[in-house]
Image 1 (cartoon, rainbow, N blue to C red):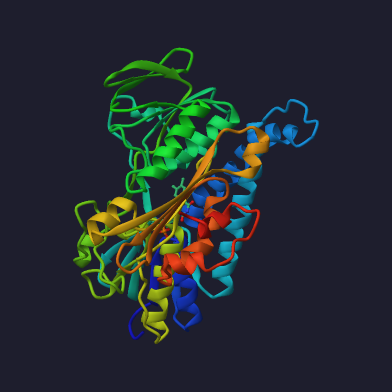
Image 2 (cartoon, rainbow, N blue to C red):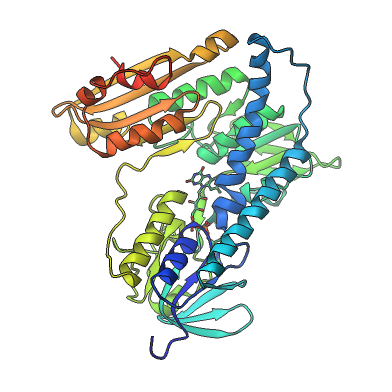
Length: 448
Ligand code: FAD
């Protein structure tokens, strides 16, 4: 470490940065980590965790209704947003403390400031202090991208949504990715009137077509209003605080809240990366090789800032591989193939591997098996919502190359099945497994 203040300086204490810092320190490195907002990063503070807690909260709307069909005398119940909001925020505080404690226990120095890069081994802190490190890890994540229409400042993003003063009676959500669809489900279940607008007529681009079509059909049936080919013209704030949104191809709409879920951009603006010759791609993401090394040999980057797959477990794994490789004498690389993913919509979706159309393009010969069914619980509850499981197989080898599902608990079920897909198992292997009855998961081994 001769001549440097630290072996490793990590910029950003989110999923990737915390794991990399902790493991590198455990390997004996002298580590500091800078965080400009809160330790834990997007996932813990304003992403996966608070979002999933709201999803749980939202589900009670249906569970309470269904309970009556199962014999429970449930009186009409009111939902109180502030109670759920405050409980969720205190859980976030607890996790923020736990992450801080983990770093401290591992002798990682936490610097609660913004940091920027001044050169291949140099970092400047917001208070003006300059420090040096043998290796710098950029783990600054991504931030919401907001369209630059007139009045966009009246809207909020996922950063603010967890702090709303009151539940909006009418909410307009812009975007059609997973965050937009998850919040559409959450607000709808809480009783808000939800309108989702999108520039194209495709939701959840990149997800399997049949599964996303099923979500659209169910969401419309539930009463979520979708407006397609709608681009923002502007947002005006009326005297009473309501927001009127003008868009292409549709009538204006007045709502109480506009939520932008229009994509996330890597956090590389004004980070000083040009001082070290770190190259960015066209979307502003740090260009890295398979070892997460940037075009500057002493600077690495992991997680959303590299825009490979923007998911927490991927950022964590990239941070861990970096630490073991650079400081642990145990080099390994993250395999970005067959990463399972989920959308915590109502009902949820989950998938792993190639979609049907990706498989047809890549392999030519493809066999598809499906199970289109009504979950037993939904039948008794009188809930007319069908689940859909889809298995995509290589037509020549019978190998399962993709598995996609929508239905109750789909993400919980898919995680186990993803092991089989990752292991390269065939349809015959699934068929050879006896069904576990009565479950929804048994459809995985009964598909025709
Ligand atoms: P982050 O966790 O974003 O951490 C980056 C940190 O760097 C931040 O704390 C930031 O404040 C800090 N920082 C930035 N610049 C500087 C600087 N110059 N100096 C100091 N600090 C800086 N993923 C899933 O896997 N499952 C989900 O269900 C899921 N749900 C999500 C829901 C929402 C609403 C959002 C927004 C994201 C969700 N994600 C989900 C994505 C997940 O949160 C990210 O993939 C993950 O947090 C990326 O980790 P990271 O370490 O790359 O960045």
